[in-house]
Length: 111
Image (cartoon, rainbow, N blue to C red):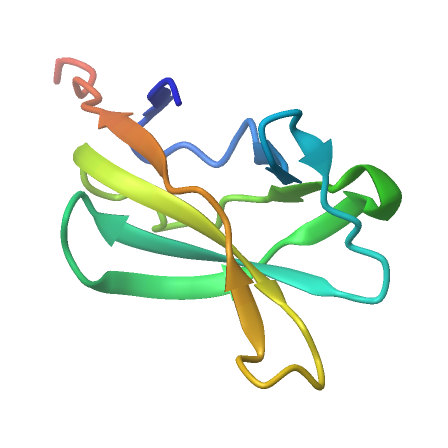
């Protein structure tokens, strides 16, 4: 999967996903399920896990709306959607890890 680039300290655009499975990329139905986003420095432990919004359940489409402070530091990160499955023995299903590059912002010059 291609690396997503987003500006440091940004809160838009949201991070959008279509969750699919198999070689034919069949959408995973999210009907009756919820999705969280797990965020980590590339290769590291999760820094946080937050709720996503399901946009089109049958098509497996969801998004995460960035919050203030989510993108406070530039660098290489990984985002991983986590499908929460109530009543299943595992309780969740992990989707593909998405590489994210948070780009450094150059501050405005002081006068």
